[in-house]
Image (cartoon, rainbow over all chains, first blue to last red; front, side, top):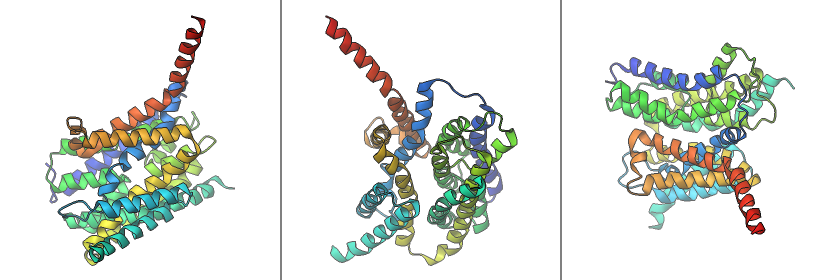
Length: 114
Length: 245
């Protein structure tokens, strides 16, 4: 069983599992996969993974720990701002920071408006 | 230009983007009862956003070790696909120890940038690419862990969106330029929503911290897009066949 007293063991398990997943394919697959379908599939995978991770979870991302209900409004507005900025090729850092700021402003404004 | 330096330059925005996200991880870990050193070591040895968040939740909750292994495996399974994809972009004779070093930092963002390289990915370039993100991810965690007591819950909450917006900044520009990537992005997002909200199917996102839902949505999305060519070819053949009748 995991516990905070014996946290070292759990930390070791996490690190080893994560590393093994990463090292096995790149470490041992040495031939080029020829199949066109497989190549296309591997090309699309990163986009698909990131997209599936982002939606719909991003809508819950601004909710503070222990809140009674999800803070959808700030998350939705900040997400739209992020999509527009990303559409205009604004780069990772600017997109992320402006979105955080947007969420913060909305969170501050909501109690004033309502 | 020196390949290592080119990698450093390309990786630096990722490093900056990692700071708010790992900052959030540090905040949450300390709130759960980890000390700042433990939180920082977890970040340094995992380099995995969602996997780490899920992992500390399980450790704090006293889950069995096997559950920790399986959850980490499932949530991080995408790294296996990315690693496989990257194996196709390195020289076949690249020695094992170099591959083993590169493997350590196959993260969503680092991989995405490496995958967009026109040529094969070399060891010096990838080495440069991974250097600053590792520093940023580790330092950010330490900062968040130390600053934990200073920030309001609302501010802590708002930092939570940084990770996802980085993902958005990675997927939107290629989706705007290529229609198939756009289809891949939209299909996977839709499937992921279905797995979360449609009753009966949503058990996928309830087990293993949502790891399965992401894997299945991504695999289906990528498989569909990879099959578009086949589908078109098939339709063309059908139409031609029809014209003869």
